[in-house]
Image (cartoon, rainbow, N blue to C red; front, side, top):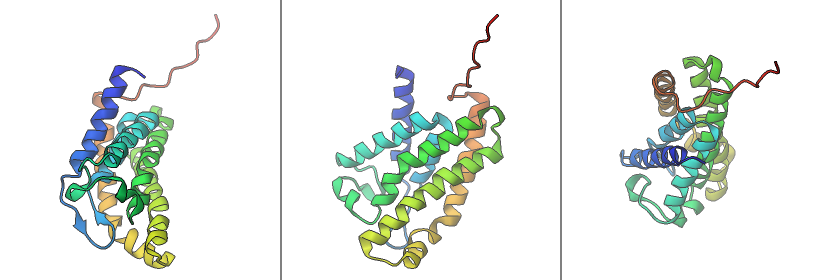
Amino acid sequence: MKTRDLAYVALFAALTAVLGLVPAINVGPVPITAQTLGVMLAGSVLGARRGFLALALFLVLVAVGLPVLPGGGGGLAVFAGPTAGYLFSWPFAAAVVGAITEWTWNRYNLAWALLANVVGGIVVVYAVGVPVLALVLDLSPGVALSTGAAPFLVGDAIKAVVASVVAVQVRRAYPVIERPRRAATAP
């Protein structure tokens, strides 16, 4: 991995940590935070591999106890609580956003960006977070959906739009993801 790639990974881990400074809105066992915007941006701007690594680094920072979650949270205990599934999903969500972004790179526009951010940044996060919430709190699937997904839909949709607009503009001005190279043709 190049030094530049390491810098990007660290930058987006730090961005996700800074988004944790935005006060959380407590709506139940899982708070509404701005940090999923960091997940979406990491995948959209860095691509699958570096986006995954950025959020994996962020989770390492959480695990060692740095107060990078909203309200100054951190430490190993959060990985056994009701929000554990959401946290564990973040590197994979960023990777899915990045994979869709890379796959659509030659035709990447706002619609593709929005699709990538909704599938990776919302569907993947909920697909892991809601079942873990249900398991940890012993909730029925319906109650887990109503407390672990429904309150977040509007906010996450707004974050997906913001991440998509930013990603399209970054691609135009300073593309971090390298364009796929064509195979050399024989003379």
